[in-house]
Image (cartoon, rainbow, N blue to C red; front, top):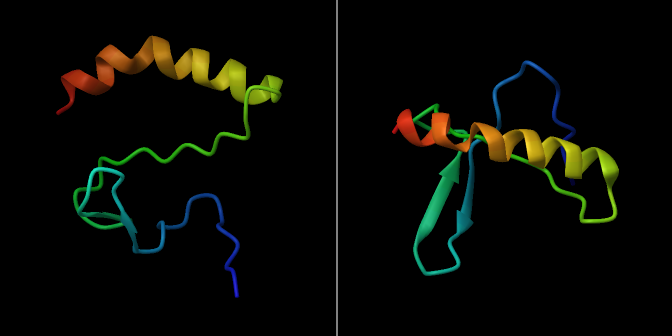
Length: 64
């Protein structure tokens, strides 16, 4: 059973496996997580969005 996410609501706590081993928990502290849904190269909306995020990458790195 899936749960639809709602804008402005907290992200549900979800634990996922990391590719290199270990786990990461989304929706838990620290709250400085960014979750991006990417549909693929064929999606013009995603491509535009990722281009904008790429330009902001240095600002995200400074927040660490």
